[in-house]
Length: 354
Ligand code: NDP
Image 1 (cartoon, rainbow, N blue to C red):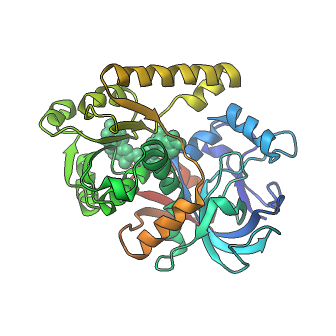
Image 2 (cartoon, rainbow, N blue to C red; image 1 turned 135 degrees about the vertical axis):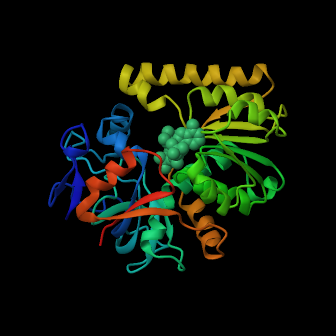
């Protein structure tokens, strides 16, 4: 089977098209083999080929038995996909061969930039019927990540979201373009920070207020606005600390950041010291929040088929639309990676695998 893989960590030039190295096969009865029609490229994929997250992800690989050869190589990246079921394990009841599905799989699994992928039934859902595989592939990873951040960690759901004020730090990329639409579908008031050229895009997705962080002094500008019930941070660095002042000081208000040092700490210091250091940093962030009566939390991508069930309905009722910036054929995956590595994305980059 063909898959884009690496045999050692490095740059995009390390990616090669392997015809045999990453054979996918069902290994447990809750898994399915899926023919991939399209997959997206996320910033995590670019970082992973450079070795980002290798220490912790290798621990997870060993625990889950997905590292059968004793090494992670050949390593195929890619976290999400849209495709067709070609084989089901004995315990799979919700899906059958021929079903069109989409999903986002854990970082410890062989990735989706391949002709076939193995996923657990808890990681997938039926694909929305009203969009193409290319469009569908742009959604699962950012949807599952947003769900982890806003719902699991931020304790937000459709029923308690209406009328709440969300500040979205970084609105024009994959996470931003999805989160704006989810928050608007749930009746939130959404303020987005964006570059000048992306203002039209984020406005078209429903943002109520857009602050152009390139031409305005963001922190002065935010002082002119009412405080926020939720802040979703996809930028990190000083943004996490400085934005805290704009969160409402009430107990259900949360600043959730997706930019955490967890994986990098483990890469730099080893698993146990890295986890310990990350726990300390998380504690410091929590304390910073608590001393001002506010809550700061970290969130990480978690595969979530049930969330994708909900998102499917929202796509089919056109509350959420895919935002695909550019599509690359399977033969040109390296160009797609280059595009993602250059940043300034406006929605998602998708690979047409068929
Ligand atoms: P993208 O690359 O798709 O988008 C990033 C967007 O942010 C771009 O549109 C960029 O445009 C914009 N941006 C950059 N700097 C700023 C800024 N200072 N203010 C406002 N906007 C800015 O990335 P994703 O949306 O997929 O992910 C965003 C980040 O979230 C990732 O880099 C990663 O750190 C984190 N993440 C964490 C996950 C986790 O599990 N914890 C999972 C997924 C993502 P421009 O530069 O032109 O303004």
